[in-house]
Length: 264
Image (tube, rainbow, N blue to C red):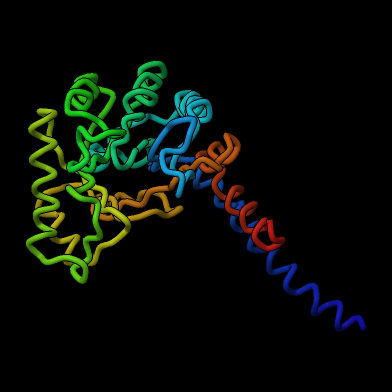
């Protein structure tokens, strides 16, 4: 019987060791480094009924932005990542797709709290209903608080199994030209849509961009601007979770691990 009890304890001991190991990473996560967050829409009603998680409520976003402004981390543009110094504490706020609420909801709050943000714009949607117009892009980029960078022309999968080489090249080249023409600012960063890429796609992107955002991950930016991970922030995230992800990511990961194990 005692032997059976000891065997039953082994998984619990392993779990405890793993949890304490993750919590120990807080020393690293709360220190220097660059955290890159990925948002989409900020609005009360979901922008897409099929994927309401993409729309963070304005009240929640303001709470998060107030915390970011008070956190001691400097907000930077996505295009500035290659210039950041190791040992600093930085935060890059990014928004994908170019929803109009990035202008009506996000932009006023950026001005209120003095934070920078980057919008990755799908250029084929400029001026379409629900998306940013050329005039809005010019106003925001002129403010010094917003940088508008590329999310390709169509937002379609880019792996060469889905597109031809010339099509992929055009997605990167043409979106860069359009955005630079509208904003009058240099466009040197791109977020590859849908996480659809392969080494050849990334090679093509490097011909036009200095910074490439390739997917979502809990990893910190490791000073490789050609493969930048981002952490997605969604409607379900509470302020506590955002704070934990920013200051105590090890604790957050440990809690999430336990929740999954007990089925919550």
